Image (cartoon, rainbow, N blue to C red; front, side):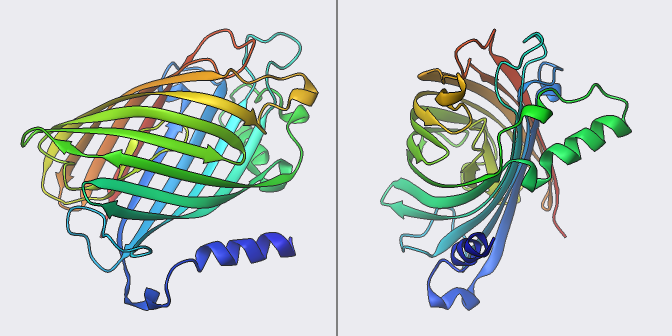
Length: 300
């Protein structure tokens, strides 16, 4: 635990010494759940991500300087077995909690983000206890595979994304991107998103790790709405979630397709609902799944 605490302190204190000049420019949140999509409770069962953006100011795009805009990211996720996997479990149960810091900057018209997350998995996180208590409280079926979940472990992951925003009109922006992740899962990904509507074109977006949905982390505030559509393809190497020495094998190719509605109701009140299709992630998974994502922001 001492090593974990030291790493967490290092992550939280990342950035230049002038951090006292920074303010919280915005907070992005996204809750995802399988039940909000295809009304099941399986595989990528649920997650919650919070992104706290700190910097001196927001001018419609990330600053050019290194360390001038930092995202402090907290994320928790539940990955469970499928209900149609019979007496055995088709994939291990994972309860995870992560804390990280990511830098966002502009390289001309291109945006670069990179950072690291320290992730804890296993019963030590309390995630499985929380899910079991929640299911018991609301008379839901017991979560599958908790008794055979992956053991306590820590993983340090690095993540980098390069994107390009092409403004086609006042209402349309196209954002192709490429992403590389190493650590808990080794993934190389390419894809893109399209923003169609009156808002979002000068907002600061961060990406949800599991679904790829773009989260408005710094909102311009003007009322309006926008539809976001996106898709990506990934090549997957090693995955700590699917240990091969336990007989699990990750699918080398993954596909995600997503759509969502961002609605700025008032300057400090916003709403999001989105759907994401995830293709099969492991050998033996019977089908893909549909996740729902939800956010309601009240900033006072």
